[in-house]
Image 1 (cartoon, rainbow, N blue to C red):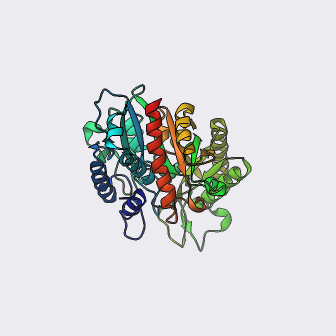
Image 2 (image 1 turned 135 degrees about the vertical axis):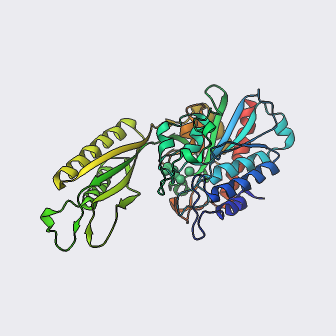
Image 3 (image 1 turned 120 degrees about the horizontal axis):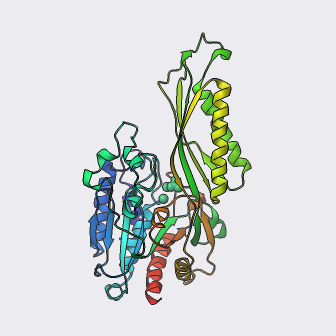
Length: 399
Ligand code: GLV
Ligand code: MN
Ligand code: MN
């Protein structure tokens, strides 16, 4: 079955009937994992799973051999497209099917496909859970996090695996490769199917609560109000302005939640999330400090209190030059020019960079649209990605 056709099939597996959404440890994730398992087995790989919902599919080489891991995630945001994450896993399966059994047998390393169970952080607002369970970095604070219905992450993981012993440790891996839809417009503008990623922007995720006082919407004069939503709204616009005036900074408030909302009650408390990213870590830290003091002054001016919880911070990650050159040469086998571009999106390669040199391949994305049902990569571009990963494996074998 063609990789592009598999993407359509996997994209039809969802937690909700009307849109694509697969979140950590959901029914949709279990069905998707069963489908991946079947394709991995059909590709003659040995498949194992862990208690964090990850799947690992390995070529038949002894454990003692060096290891190349190729992977990505199969969870999604709500209202997702079919390519973000899934493409990297399915293209890796396709690449191993492209190589002949004889080529695989004679590789001087094993290849393992990692299908990670949570990169987006949709359910617990914390990213890279799947790849951090595999590469280390799960914190007690992650386990204590609650989803919107109050379920803790810890309650979904068997006790013996809550502090997982990492499957991947530093010095044991040759490299980690990840193919991913670009999620931006650069390759389309250049009219080229594939590009090489130079670096992944650092990101900070925070939860912020403004607390005021509930009051009657008809009787409380405007100058006596402590409206938590109005404070949150001012913060949203301040974050937008800062990002607009700071080159390469992006800031997003993606969740906004009014406690006990009612149309005739002045909001007493409002929670919001902030996702802030920049390729340069010191600019990111300075921007966070600026927004912390902005939140404080908004609260003071409006007679509110505010609480700031930093949920996750990831430094920018540079891709490994030597591994990137291998993928670059593989792209160049079929493409005249090989663009290099940086990634504003986060990827499992960030968590895997703690244990391995990482390299990433980007695939052209129609209109730069992602985290949206219209996300699209063409069958020809997906096929080029599969062929390039296969060629990359051949080239790594010749090193
Ligand atoms: C993952 O899609 C991210 O938020 O960058
Ligand atoms: Mn992704
Ligand atoms: Mn995504």
